[in-house]
Length: 147
Length: 304
View 1 (tube, rainbow over the protein chains, first blue to last red):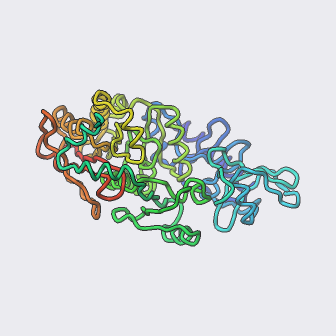
View 2 (view 1 turned 60 degrees about the vertical axis):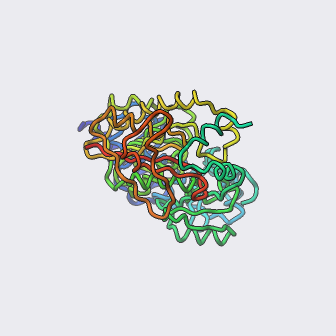
């Protein structure tokens, strides 16, 4: 038990350092931070504890990161990144939610970014050259052109 | 010529088959539930109305709204998890369960997650929910919706719900058994259901429902509450299943369900050659023509 707790504290510290360096996030909410297949998840303590008793567990809590460490929409909503945030206009936000690359007009200094449109967090993406590719999984993209 | 289903339904006491038949020909307004885990209700309403949505409050659910909008799943607000597309009557099932912050809740047949995410919302994400389903595809849909709604206190499991007491006996404060059923309350899909419906299938489903009901009850802590619901009108899948629980588990006691501003009918005490205990009247039947929603059966049981 103690070994598991120690491992969890170490993991959380490591994640906190990464998120601070990349996104300027100061503090992580209280809860369990789980690492599975190089992806971070967040769960309340009660859920993490109950999961220990269950069989056939497929997942616990929320995904914080997806492929290549890109933040999910929920991670952005929960953690409120301060750095490496790009503000998208309405047209760019619509492109983003369809899963299309967005042209920024200039190179972004960081590869990993978080995108925002007004008050809405749109999740993380990967910058390459002057473009940024949203990390939205296909099931979460808007299919039609119009709202 | 009348189909076997028509004959079956016309035998239901206090059921207006003609009105039911009429409702299967109209399209009812759809409804959404604002996900207050992510967004303030008033802000979202204002935002959607400014985009031309027409929203009308669901009288029995503070976060529910009827709308005439058609493409509700393809909007930024839906992608961001600000609302869930959910039938208005199904919101009443979660209200009957009445989950409290800090509870341990089991949703034994949870996919696609409308009620699970509503439960999390009512619990203010305090406590924990085990959201279970059997098939891989259904669990995938459940996981997607739990993620989209930002529910951090859910554990998703894939198991036969009937096996749960092996590892989770007496573990939960509340259990929701929203059982797979013949779907006679799903008027939007009525034509497909009518084409496939047989009385034999009803009996086969009833056997599964009885198993899930007993398992769900066995997972309750003493003093805990179980809600059993289906979206069908068949007494063999509803009152008969509740009666089966009462016969097998003497500590089970039916409780009255109080949800304001929704028209309901009481549970049946007789069906064909079977008779059920008088307490089964405390269960509720929601008919599609009453509230302009899908039809449901809901029973609330406590473990003494």
